[in-house]
Amino acid sequence: MGVFSFDIVSEYDKAEMNNVVAQAQREVGNRYDFKGTQAAIEWLPNKTGIKLIGDNQFQVDALLDVVRKKLAARGQSSKVLNMTGTPHESNLRVMWELPFKEGLSKELAKQIAAQVRDISAKAKPQIQGEAVRVTSGSKDELQKVMAAMKNAEYDVPLSYTNFR
Image (cartoon, rainbow, N blue to C red; front, side, top):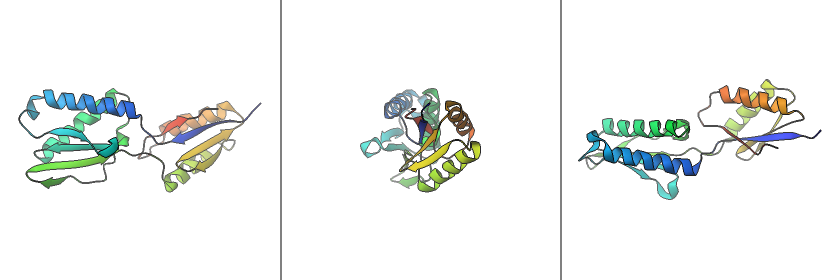
C-alpha cells in the first residue's frame, strides 16, 4: 500500500474564462439597455482580469451581473474575481478593473492546513508555495478531506489537482 496525495490550489481555467468573457461581450452587444452606450467588457493586459466600462455605476453593476451569470453558466466560481478595487470615474464613464485571483497566500495556506488537520488526523498537509499538498495512506481519508473542504467557505475558489 502506497502513500496517496492531492494538491489544494486556487487557480482558474483560462480557456473557460476566455469563453465567459466572449459570451458576456456578446450579450452586452445584444442587450437593448446597453445599445448606444459605452458599456463594454475588456481584458486587462495578459488576460489577468477584466475591465468593466459603463456610463454610470448602475451600468457597471449590470455588467458585473452579466459576468457573474456567465461564470455560473460555465461552472466557474465568481470568487475568482478580485472585488477589492473600487470603480473610478473619469470622462463621464465608470471603469472597474477586476483582476483574477490565483494562488494561495501564506496565511490562507496555513488556515487550509489547519483545517485539514482538524478534519482528519491521518491526513498530513504540507504547504508548497501556492499550494497545499495533502498526503495520507488511505484514499478514503483524502476523499473525506476533499468533501469537507468543498463545504468550507474561503474567499478564493479552491480546486484539487495532482491526485496520486
